Length: 495
Image 1 (tube, rainbow, N blue to C red):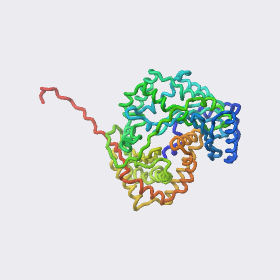
Image 2 (cartoon, one colour; image 1 turned 45 degrees about the vertical axis):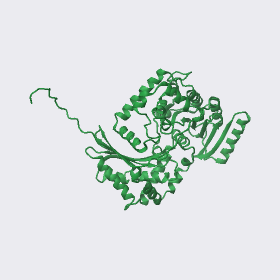
Image 3 (spheres, rainbow, N blue to C red; image 1 turned 120 degrees about the vertical axis):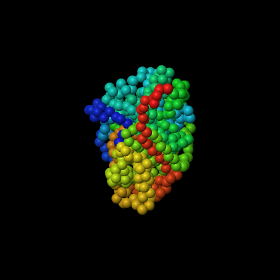
Image 4 (cartoon, rainbow, N blue to C red; image 1 turned 60 degrees about the vertical axis):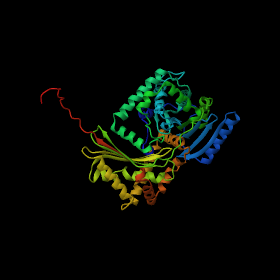
């Protein structure tokens, strides 16, 4: 899956994190540890739960599960706030991530772009703190911050030395419910977003292709409009729309707080209860449901670029479907390596392209296996499409997957998966992705086991089932015809 193939989705300040951190504060002492006994860890967590409840704190332990060399604890406060804690006492930093159960799929028709707009708005002023406070304080700590919006969620991330976690929690809890949504702040950030759209979509051929792909693949499905919003909708948004969206979707009951790194879980839970325990739960909003669209679609776009582009996709089930491990392996063997089939078909044997990749973008209501190709100058997207189709036809016919291809794809997938878990940010991101997207950590925890169990027959079965005409969407990014400049003859002049 695409998110699994990236060590980090967000740009982090590695230089700041590499600097010598301050000593861990009281209650956050760290020591090296061996793989933890899950039963012992759960017993300790249950004892903490009992102590809290005896002191009148309504806190529920939902689960304790093995995670790397330790465990992940999943808690829930009385106001609905979910908390995930994964201790790593070998690092003196903590990833603090707030995941909101709202993405572009939760927007209503005519008001697209609000979820992404709030990725920006959350860095503005609150009722007690001026704009820029979070960034300034994090810089003083030696930490970093970022945020991202997807189809199904929005999340905010900080990475800080362990002794500064409490200060970050206080600021996060504050902006979750106390954002100062002034008309001036709204207009300022909306202008930034509209400029961003012009840069990454309207004036970018790859952005135009991606937006067209989503439109064709999903149609009226909740995933059918762009995450950044349409220009028409953005132009029509009002500060009243923003305030209503914030009041509806930003509340403790729709938030997952994920913390990974060097901390004492008992001390940290006390701090979380202090800053979040009295926040309002909010009214749970009904998340959209939908079935996968059907039917093939193809469109040609005239793009202003130095070379043509091709995007091909197939609609797939949601990311927690039982076929996903085999589909991951299929995606990996198609394009993501020098010896893969599409690499040979497009880049090496008779080269017509400079780039070819495959991604499995998994989401709550459906997924896409996408192939992206950048042609060499003078080569045609239609020729690349013919080669992609021939490759898929051979896979489902005379040239099925080999054992060597299976092994290589598995190894690359597992290596990418474990590489993503080497950082506290990567671990927090994957925990948040699965709990917010699917309500369960099981697909994440069994990923390597599921991949290892995939057979050649499994890959052939999912290829024959899903890489079919009724699920296929094509966008051809073709060169726009050159503009011919000429003199306009004045009326009445002689030829």
